[in-house]
Length: 297
Image (cartoon, rainbow, N blue to C red):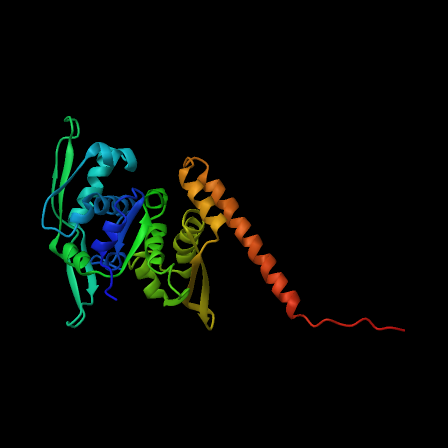
């Protein structure tokens, strides 16, 4: 059976305004500077991919009104301009595997050309072109994920968004876990070499907040397990799986709620999950305990 391409996936989801189709190679892309996009630039990138639609792989100029971006992006003009400039100046490195060719790495910018009309003008718009590198990767991709626009815009941490996109490629597969070295996990999160170098900081500021947000907002859930060699954590096992129907409904409801109070609701959700896991662990432990028969006189 012929594999579906990203273009096929975009066509299948054209009627769903909440679906953004992300090529797997872009989800797994690495940044030449060793870091990753800021949260606002990463969100804008997803929106521009969606706005381009089925023409995303074409060598053409796309346009989108400021009003459409502001309606969903809720950023000031300066923040929006900063995010656009970041996409224009950021170079990426993507591993490409094509039939009949040896695997290779392709590098280039995200956007190769940007035009911005004065925002005060009536009907002002942004015109942009994706780079040949980006278009080539998307056109040849048969590895993709359909992600929620509402979820993308709701995440409050760039690490959460990176992990959400990464796990979206894997959530529907039979494989439900993978072990990463610390360096590989840092690449997944897009962490700069000089940031979060201590395990305690990596766990506190990247892993745990990202997993908490995913468990609150996504249609799948995730956990992690540190793996030690001696006293040092040298790897992490990530686990994931599709949520039960009622949990997916609750995540959808949360995406419709106001951002106000979301942090408190997420904390409550995290505590509930922890309590459920403790209860399951205790139940399993009791099942493995030997049962003593009462001594009769």
